[in-house]
Image 1: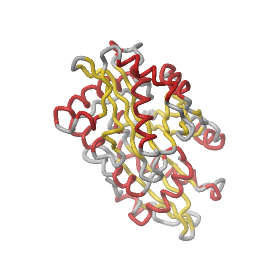
Image 2 (image 1 turned 90 degrees about the vertical axis):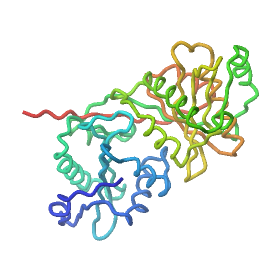
Image 3 (image 1 turned 180 degrees about the vertical axis):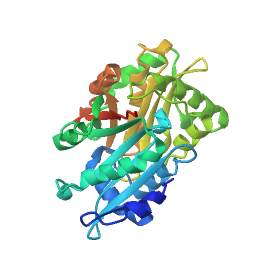
Image 4 (image 1 turned 135 degrees about the vertical axis):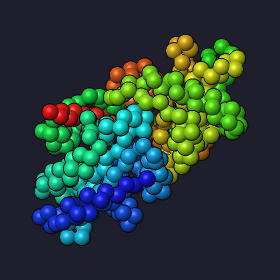
Length: 334
């Protein structure tokens, strides 16, 4: 849920060189999304998707979002939030956005100062941002404020119109020849036993994914809320590998509401079942699902250190885009 700060109403709703920063409200969604989708082109969202994602922030999970107006025009925004999969009560992710035509006017600095002021009550020990590697201006902005690069993620996409599945079918046959079944969750049916199996496997394989902070446990209840209630959840787009009743690996594909394309989520295989071609086969099954529902593209991102997964994606024909870097600022208190 969106949180509204009491301190904002007193201290930051005042005009600052014609700039007004105030708590985010319902009517800000369209302008916020226009700006966000323009900057984060790999993470296109509809208003319905964003509102649904905002609803995940309940209980201990914090999300605060603010809008900036200049002469009644929406010019920027910032939000800070906990990362649901790397939760720590004093570690936050900051998104700070300024419209391109409004840059180099000091608005970003004002927003950053406002964000730090709002964060104080949470006693943060670190703050994380993501910046496009090719955006030298934003990189310099972060570095000048003591943010250091901690990881890099390659974005990539697969053009489905030109993808031909036939040359890759032997990869699926190789896995199936090992008495490993490749099943979608739609094949397995939806009941608590399946959901708990899915959660158990997901909880294990996610631990091996490189990340900037340690993975935090996700309860079964939160997993169901985050995954099954996701607007883009596709039972036919979630694939698992099973051998003699044991779940060995999974690959997730989610449908975008905004453009009908797919996002590839986590693909992972238990350490004991690796080097059998399972990850490639699961991805191929997901790609077949994407083609069946006539999606145009599949998007994904991978940590630069995850060479095995990057290699698989390269072989499948994913086209790499400019990378995004994660940067972290550590707060030191005397």
